[in-house]
Every structure is written in C-alpha cells, then in structure tokens.
Image (tube, rainbow, N blue to C red; front, side, top):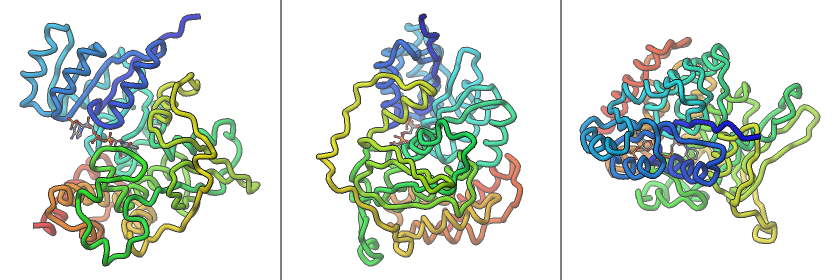
Length: 386
Ligand code: NDP
C-alpha cells in the first residue's frame, strides 16, 4: 500500500535543526513533503531551500526582506508572507499535518500555541516554548488532542525508552550532559573565556544560542524544565549526569530499579527523523555506532557551584509559575550580550539570578502574564547590562 505522505511545516528551516530536517526529508521523500518553510532574516538560504523543496508557502519574519523573497519565489508559484503575525498564522493551514518548531527562543511560543489550537502534531525542537509556558502548552495539547514529539536528543532518548511502558511508573530520569567546552574549569578560568571558545562545542554542531547555553549549562537547565513538562515529572525525579562522550543520550529508571538508556552517535538527524516519522522507525543511512571506537564511556557529577545556571534552572522550576519564563527571557538577553562581547561568561548567570529575584512573581500565569513577564525580565536584564 502506498503511504500517505506527511505534510510538514518547518519553522526555522534555515537553522541547524531546520537544515538537518530538510536533509532527512529529502532522504525520506516517500514519507514526507514540505508544506511551509520559515526563516527570520536569512533570505538567501530561504529562497534556495524553497526552490529546491517547493513548499506551498514561505514566511520570512523580517518584513524588510519580503520584496526580495517574493520576487524570487513568485515565478515558482510559492506564496510568500512576512512578519511575526504571518509566522504565527501560517501553521493554521489545513494542508499541514505536522509542525517542526526549529526556531530559536521565545519567538516559538505564539506559533506553537496556534499550531496546537489547529490540531497539528508538534515535533518540538524549540525547548524555550516549554520552558516559558509548559503548563499552558501541555494543557492545550491535552485539550486539542495533539502529540508533542520531542526532537531534543535527550528527550527523544527518554521518549524512545518509554515506548511500550505506558502503565509503568517512572522512578526517575537521568538527562546526560556533555559538559560543554569548559568542563573541568573553575570560576577563575571561566572569567576570561571568549566568545570563540564558547562557540566550540566538543560533540555537537548547533546554532549560536544553544551552543552558548551548552557551554554555560543553561541548556541542561532548560532541558530539565522541558523534561518536567514532557513527561509529567516532579523536580526530584529529574537528575543530570555529565557524560562527555555524548553516546548515551539519556536514561529512564523504572519503579523496579530497571534502567533503560538510548544510545548512538551524536547526530541530530536521528531524533529529528524519529519525531517526524513516529511511531515508525524508517530505514536510514546514518553512520552506525562502533563500541570499539568508544571503549570508555564515563560519567561525572555536574559542577553546579561553577556552572550556576543549572542550579538556577532547578530553583526556578521548583518555584514554578512565571519563574522559568523570567529565567528564559533573561538568558536570551545575556546570551545575545555575550555573543556581542558586551558581558563576560560569568556575568551571564549573575544577571539571570538578579532577574529572577527582581521580576514580579505570578503563581498561575495566563498567556498575557507570560508576555508581560518576558518583557519585564528582558527590561531588567538590559538595564543590568548597560
Ligand atoms: P539556529 O540559530 O541554527 O536556527 C534558528 C532558526 O530560527 C533559523 O531558521 C532562524 O532564521 C530562525 N529564527 C531565529 N529567530 C527567529 C525569530 N525571532 N523569528 C522567527 N524565526 C527565527 O538554531 P538551532 O537550529 O540550533 O536551534 C533551534 C531550536 O532547536 C532551539 O530552540 C534549540 O534549543 C533547539 N535544539 C537545537 C539543537 C541543535 O542541534 N541545533 C539540538 C536540540 C535542540 P535565520 O536563519 O533567518 O536567522
């Protein structure tokens, strides 16, 4: 029988996850078709991708790039829209089966909410959305009967370990962390690290924001909060273990003490494909793991004294309400400032901690509260950086 192809919208197609998703989809063209592509401002790559993959529609968030993109894609009968509102609305198209949220940061929140309300299953790479508004997103997903399929490699690993375990309680999970480029350094050494050093991740080639988050361990903090919402866990059920080889992608421990881990070479194409094709596993040509190349898999405790972001993320998860939203907004500001060389590496967590202290606490935030908290936290962070 011929498969009905899944029609995919990729939000953030010009990024690291977006371009790898396009490679997966090209290799699996019997199963998937591209319906929508979006970018922030990289018009050249968006045009090139659209000509190659022939989506129905593209959106460029930067409105100044509309004319250029439209002029290039009009002869190909591809519809072009621009601006943040268009990006949030495009996910509602009837012809879309699944939305891959591969855009970075808070900008993912509104399109994800709209996609869920339009009953589109979500392949979620944009972890910030769950960090900012986990309660809202998971409640909406339940209400509209939508699956949220994790793309993050750790959460994909946990999800794969949980297949077939619906009625079996999770005792705890271990999220693995590579430790990033500065593993083993003390605070004195970290005070002088540069942007260029922070952008060199030992195992993964990713976008700039998540690479800095990985170096500062904020990425692991965001993932802890993401795991809480995806798998309905209490904070004390979530543990982090440093595993520098990034071969074991995460571990679930069940109530009989049994532990299941998912492992493989560090390659985002696998979790991307698993989320897009779920519940099927598709044949793929990804490189295979060889035990003899990795005779030693090692594990360490994370150093939360030196890398305070991980502790801050746990604190904000325990505090709940809008606290993770405040943490995320502050972090987006400081990462941007660090990338622009306006602040040092250690100042990032200092600013985030002050934002959490100073921002107004909201115990049961509505969507509007999240928008307000995001703005307030950005304001506080920007004032501290000036
Ligand atoms: P990139 O920076 O490489 O790509 C981000 C994409 O989002 C680009 O297409 C970019 O467009 C677009 N974008 C950025 N800002 C906006 C905005 N304000 N409005 C609309 N579009 C925007 O990021 P990654 O691919 O590395 O990461 C994407 C998400 O996936 C993040 O949430 C990250 O945490 C998560 N993730 C990434 C992994 C990875 O291996 N890269 C692994 C696990 C999770 P343009 O190119 O025009 O700037």
